[in-house]
Image 1 (cartoon, rainbow, N blue to C red):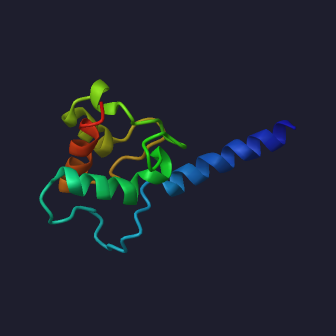
Image 2 (cartoon, one colour):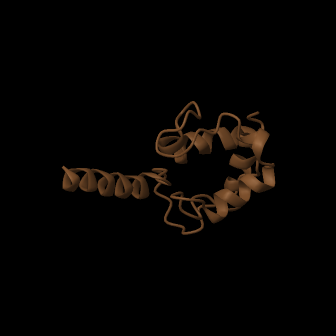
Image 3 (cartoon, rainbow, N blue to C red):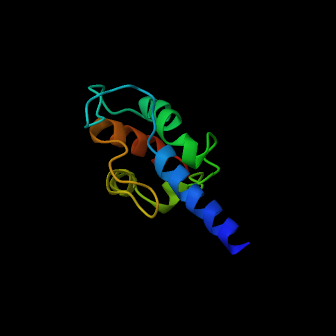
Length: 111
């Protein structure tokens, strides 16, 4: 029984690492930064493409935590830093530059 539980937990961790940050955009650049200016509207689109697999399409949290009221807890800059640096099981650099800023702008409105 313990071996089965350990296998399940290990598999879940590997799935988390593989799922977070998969954005299906076939961009071969390692910077993952678009040339689009940062905007709330672009942030929502990028969140759905890149972050929803872990945080849920309605911000309810799946593997990652719920983000429904993240803007009440963190400033836009704090959120951008978390996106850039990672936290817990969330990897760093999932989004960079204007893409990270756009998602942070959008999430900061969630209060």
